[in-house]
Image: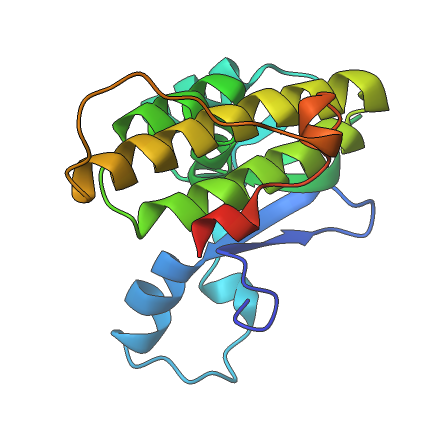
Length: 191
């Protein structure tokens, strides 16, 4: 779990059906604090019959199930067989890495230190959209729009910090950005 940076491990039977789950919280409470030797079989410390959710279920179902059961990890299944795990952290990361989430974070960004993280979020959103099959033309237009918002926020923040007069201003975006074809976040503006 530490090596792969995951918060849970699902234990399956021979047919790949989830039989149990062990989370970091379980390791802390049931193993470490309980003084259980690390050589103890996992079956004695795991939670049996983990809560599962069909892979095609909407994210809202995952959140509802987690809140009703008081859990933070769900085994994703297809035909009863394990195909993955979704965590509460994954769901909220998806929300943060949405157009709305990033746009809202840009508007709320007050400190300079948060701006590079927002540029990285734009890049992560681009990877997610590309993995979902978005075409290049729409992807680059979305990235350019988000990058414009981020650049505008940087300019607004820096103008206030430098106490520049409150006058109308503009910036010129050339080449890829000017054609709405930018394919990466504006990391140079963050330095």
